[in-house]
Length: 494
Image (cartoon, rainbow, N blue to C red; front, side):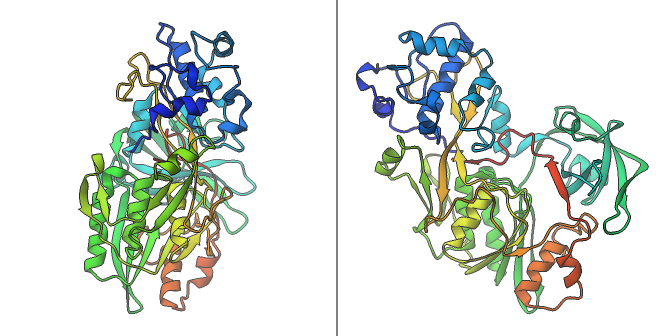
């Protein structure tokens, strides 16, 4: 993950009071050197948001002149009094956001940045299964529905499969008021009470079975490349890739998958992003460059920062992201040549869980090639964030050892090469199709409804299952999912 620090010498200009700046002042950093850790954290929060936050100019309490002069804990009594009035640091942060959680739905703060860093590496406390939480129509009973199981995980060993339904956790029935407490925690084990969904269209009910399954949860590294294969159908070679998160540590492995696709001469690609909540912008650029290749060096996306930062990033030439033919590591060192397919069309499977960097790929590719989106409307997150730490040195290398607070505020909006964006209500599919709780199918199987619909479109074949594919018997009324409680999930980060 790249963390951005823009010319520290420009901090005075950004705060609008150059003459009051001292050598110790850093862009977005605290200047307080005393022993009050809470005061230091609140100073770090305000200054970080004042410098970086996308909506800084729309929040009165983040105005550059809110406190009359340079906001300093030791040199500005008005500013210090403002910080002192807020004892709850988390509430202080969210109170400074722009109409949270309506306008800004995604900025957040944590008191343990190690958990956030783990999420960005694909590490979480998990039994190795991804699930949605839903309700039966006209019935408030909550159930869990397994969407996929990670190979060689505890869930796989316990014979949990896609489509498994559960209604109880450790003997307690799931409800809208308790599912967060029961499922989003660091417990090392949980016992699921299994159930079945019975009935006919419009009259479904949950029927609990006597079966229980106990799962062990541990710190787990999930490979986001769940499935990749080549399907031969209708005289075409069709690549299928299920990719569940944009994690930089797996960029080279992803590139190797495209190397396999390339060597097998695929004609079409079905990219399954239905459960991909986002991640690294650089990984999104790499993936899009693998799909194409004919646009190397052309604009992938444009970044729109706040009014203070935009002129600076434009001057530095860092407001535009480009298609590339190289994967780079630390220090912009080339680590691989991208395997590109030069496709003019791609099929992308989506659901409500498709977000952030996934949406960036869809929107950015639309400016160049035909993107056929199959599924449901996506989350609608067209903005990116950065991680802001409380550094204690001028070079932004040493994190404050006195605490582990960090912020992940939205700092920029993304548009494509044609300046198209503004999809806060989600990206609408070309071919609408909801997942069917009664017919989840097997991921990667040619009869799985969403993939089957893509194959049907590719081959123009007439299938006997066309009606069942188009009209799911029981669409999922999702209220949450297993990754909703993970710090950094649904992020698109620089």
